[in-house]
Length: 103
Image 1 (cartoon, rainbow, N blue to C red):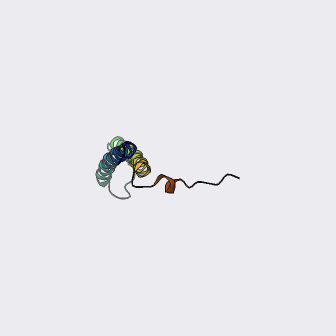
Image 2 (image 1 turned 60 degrees about the vertical axis):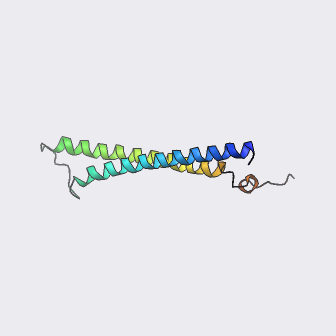
Image 3 (image 1 turned 90 degrees about the vertical axis):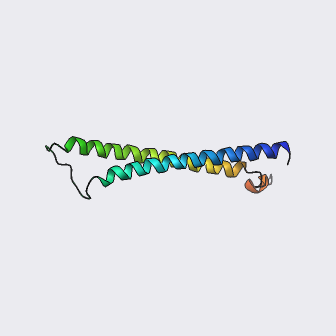
């Protein structure tokens, strides 16, 4: 394996590690949102004027934030998976980008 291929292999490994890291973070945010969501009964409306209204609205806002962060990290994980596949030295470069004949 020459120097270029070893650099591509190191880069692919680094991108796979980053993808795994962001996937774990995404899973954590998703589980946090699910736990908070399970505290609210299914179909429970916000009881306007009730002492629990403020907490209910706050919980819904936090669930939304957690799911947004989970999606953000999931998208980052997908990005790094694609980068790792592109940098993988076992993939022939010309097979990834077909050459078009000049006309």
